[in-house]
Length: 300
Image 1 (cartoon, rainbow, N blue to C red):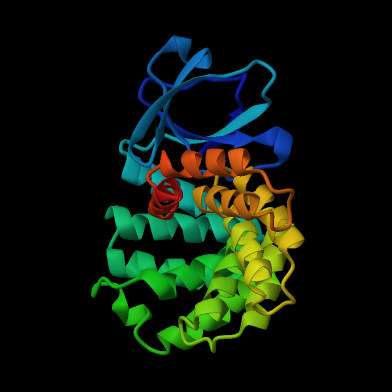
Image 2: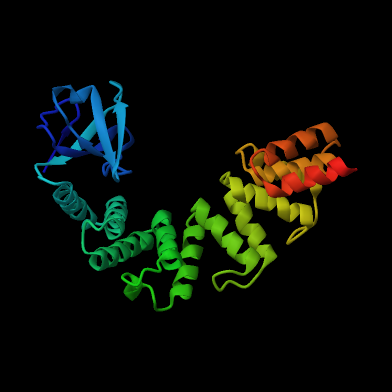
């Protein structure tokens, strides 16, 4: 194993490495970026291998990059060297290293680099350690693991109390500030999914938390709550406000919803031309409610 500054290359042909952004204190190469150095010109032109995808990228001289590298003969061996490096740091309690180790094990479980069962078990253990130290991303990944894992090879770790654990980690990720976790918790309350009791008030609260972090879909769903008066007093002005913010992120449902309000002058000044334009924009992206609405307008 070696870690040196990027300007002091010294790689051999076909060496692997993980880039580390020293300027932003990213010591663990997140996301994992595997480099294959193909020759002496590698400092100017680098071929990235990220989860099997090859991308060419020219590195700026202004970037202060470091690398982790080993003399492993295969990518699988390199991952094991990198994991050992992570575990040495993780064992000291550094949460970023724990989270990165969990992510690496999780990747292995799905890529077949290691024994799937063993890798998934380690991923679960490391994500739990990171979650206990307040890492919102770890809590969210745990919720996703309990929600999505259906492969029988992995079920040993998830078949018991799956719904209870999903609820726990989804709540935890939301409380720790994970934007997508907040949105998914809100959605679960809105529709009574994953064992959560349907509750418009709680859905509104968590949509608001996610919207405060500018989550595009949460902004649209919050607008819908205000438009329909679900969990909150009906307020078309607020509905239009949140639909507009969501539409600014190019969410087609929000574009359609905003168009409807303009057609009727709800929360905004009535503007049929603008309303139709928004509906047409959504319809051109194959959003069926917009197409149906335009068709009904054309019949009038």
